[in-house]
Length: 179
Length: 351
Image (cartoon, rainbow over all chains, first blue to last red; front, side, top):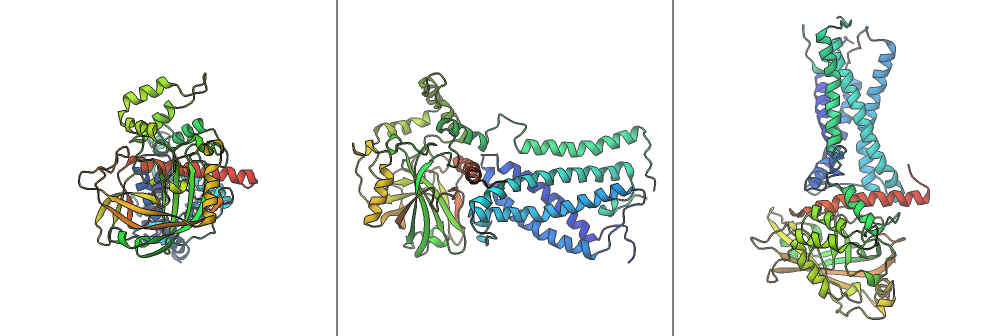
């Protein structure tokens, strides 16, 4: 396989689209559970379909991730940092898949209809169970906070590569490299 | 490619950016979640103030804590299907899981001490959608905004010294919120009934019905009882659980019925102020009959784990601009999360 310099264009598009969607989702999430204004119902009505969209996108993205050539990390990066980079990326993927499923399962366990608007309803993926809801609801919050923390670290690392190290790691996701 | 870092001025600026950009996002995140603005009114605060007035009763709802589950169905006559495309309004039957309750956060409050009663219903449409509603047996809501609801709850909290609400605080609340006067006038002359079965329960908040073509009609609704009104008796006033016993007794003799009656707003009727009932001459539509056949104590009942969030609506129904609705939805969710967690804790099954 030819050594890639950039991620596959479709993967790059998905990355930035999902970055925006997930950040939006996390901000909507923390806002909608605390505010009591009329934005509450608006945010809830965005949160659910957006979550489903993210779940669908991450499935496509994982498939692309495994089937397209990916650029190698530059040789200048020490082994422990490579290990950290790989671990953090797989944790991000894990949380991106798990979080919408936890949300869906939690609504199912509570007996809430999983409505996406316009009369579209998803089937429950779990039987109604107070005990499971009592676990899944706080879990949804903890995974959200962990995901946000992880994204901030990912962003800081990406910016370090972009602004300071300028070693091609950041541009492998933007597709533009300064000469 | 050069990965060596030269610590010149430009690099310091670049390095600072690496930290500042995530930091700004982090602060924005904290602000969005309300963690940087403790003065902002949140669902936590609403639940807190209810807990302060009713006490913390783990595993119970934070308001309307004492109640009973009921099962039955809604028999639609099809009349409301011209206003709403929700399938439950087509001619036919929809299963209902409901709950009768009395207001307040104390699950052992004697029934006769609480004049305000409620009926909550969850209609299960066959397509998986639900309509959940919580209605009260009063003609209008005491306040029109979330902020004034919070102020009212705070003003009526028991005083630390006397153990009773401070009348001075309530007086100053009424001074600033004259919109509450009709409610107090109503409460003063109101004699509660001897039964949930004979109470008329009102949506209080307005909603929108949406038909197949997308036309909207602003409505409120009432559950109008078939059973005739009898005032609360002296014997009732000696019996802490007379409402629950009466309900069991009546259901032992046969089903209990209410008509679901929609009141249609006219141009100019406001949907965002629950303190004002619409004029009595507004057109009404009888949408069908609620038939309840069975009551079950709430601790074992199917209603206990239902959050009667008024914003769980099927396609064909939508909220109005009434600000109370969003606050109810947000605070009910908080109460639900707390009590389900506590119930699991009591059973020893939590995260």
